[in-house]
Image 1 (cartoon, rainbow, N blue to C red):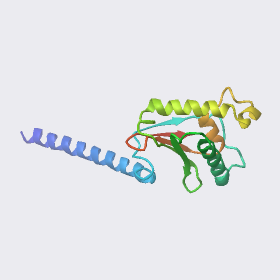
Image 2: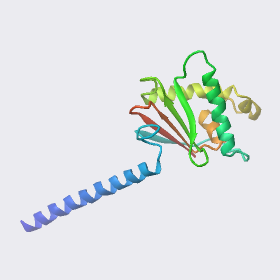
Image 3: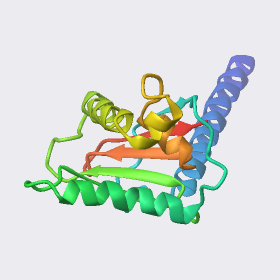
Image 4: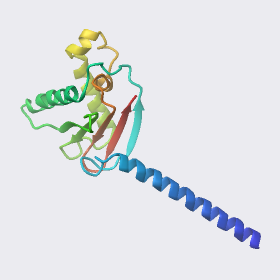
Length: 167
């Protein structure tokens, strides 16, 4: 009887320690992402993209900000309100963030991927991709990596946030 009680308590203790460790790991991850809860809700999913591109050697914070400013200018020049905002954050502006501005516009991973497919089509028409001869191979993620972005977060601004780590 005492043996089974001891074994049961040991199991409960092990489960409690595991839950505590998982909670601490999650809290540490959330602490690292200081933008979650401010610009977008906590991350609901993530993935790693192995970029075909490497960061251009002369790319720095100011280049990433210019890139974002150009994208924003294109969005604002359309005859209708932008469906999403795109901006850069981080000490070196290395985190690209896209947040939907219309209810339901980016509320699923499928809608997020559809937007990335559209951004890839736009990137493939760019002079940069044409000059490098990579318009058939590179994606929007590769373009972001060329500029030195290390992470892309896309969110509906309500409950969905997906992060792509660019390696």
